[in-house]
Amino acid sequence: MRDNISGYTIRLQQLLFGLLLLVVGLYATRSMMRGGTGNLQLAVAAVVGVFLVLLLDRHYWILCPIGFAAGSLIPSIRGVNTAEMGCLIVVATHFVRRALRHDETLHFRPMVLFALPYFVWAAISFVMNPPGLYSLGGQTIGARFYFKLIIAFWAMVVLSLQELKEDDCRHLFYALIITSSCVFVKSVYLRSLAVVDDGAVTDYALLPAAAVFFWLMSRYRLSRFLSISWRSLAAAVLLLAVLFSGKRRGAFNVAIFPLIRAFVARQDRAKAVVIYTVAIIPLVLMLAGQGNFYNLPLPVQRGLCFLPAKWDGRVAHYASGEDPFRDNVRSYAWQTVREKPLFGRKGFAIPLEEIFWVNYGGTTHDYEGHAVSGNWHNTWIGMMADFGIPAAFWWAMFCGAMLYIVHTRLRESRPGSYQSTVLVYYYCAFALMLLASHTSGHSSLQPFQWWPAFGLVLAVTTPSSLKELELDCA
Image (cartoon, rainbow, N blue to C red):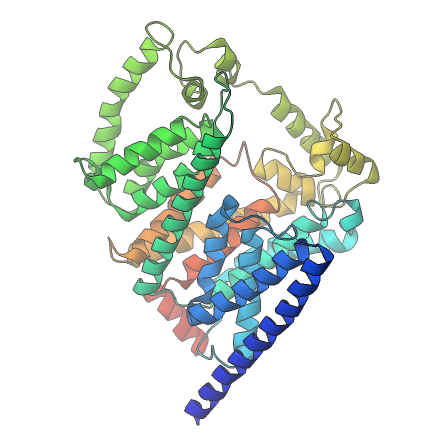
């Protein structure tokens, strides 16, 4: 009986895919005759998405993390980027498979409820203050931020229903490190075609190297990089690329990632302490020579300017730690919190006067316009300004749950396994996000990035996760 149902389902899938190809073919012909390309891109994307879902079968969930890793590798289609497409495809595929009874063994994991209070609080803000839609800029801000929260929440739920065993994590690792490498190569290639200003203090085209570096360090323990090998050479190239990007946070992240990895994975802790202690000597010598005997490239100086040295005048003001722009933005955010502590400003609703600020590039002395895009440059202050003080508490609760779950899963995973690799990556990346939350973050973009990651962490099958499923079945 089950074989008959399975055969019927496969034939139904083939029929639906054939009908979709027919519709898309007619639609594409019509678009080309009218000279339009936007709808044609959407049609082609739909065909590719359905084909990938059918090809991957039960591994369809991998399209979500790949979408986040792809970044600028694939251009946005009708304003929808790859991360959003990945979430939408995974959620839609899950419900279709459930309707066709493909996924009968999935179980709900209650830990996803730690994300629910923040989601509900944002929904209350939406109901109280509906944002402007497309005609008022909602395609990029306002309503778009609520859209991100919705699809990220459901993507988290769907991903948490999966069971990521060792082979699944191996596929995930190779898919993400290859995707991240392609993003880096494309970024460098496009940079080579552009005219680069010799006096530029940043070169953000090199920043995608950080993601590849993180995955490489997550896969191999620190001791594997101490001898001359392809690993150590690749890590050195990626490290230098990030330093030459001029991004201070990027330089800090790649510098501290191996140390965090050693401690969270409980591998080479003593070696890590010794290596970082010894590394202080050449670092001090390099800083002492800067500006006295030689000058490092300007992007490298900007990336390292949080350390004491004789920096070039073009980057010296970054070293002081003073940032009037961020100070003004946060001051405006604090003013909003004091005036509206319970629900903050009107969520992501967009006042009409601020629409003109966005559309025409205007500005004001107090940087009110940055409230439109939630550009507060501080996760906690920003969430309080957007949704009120309770929102920051709900986010802190989610962060605690994320750290607890990934720590528990990691302790139970086998060291050196691909499950351990995936958990180490998300553990370290999440820790770095928290360390930088005082200077960056967003009320919508942070949940959009980390809720699906939380779902993946919950899906990694370890003894504790299996117990959760047993309790759920009981």
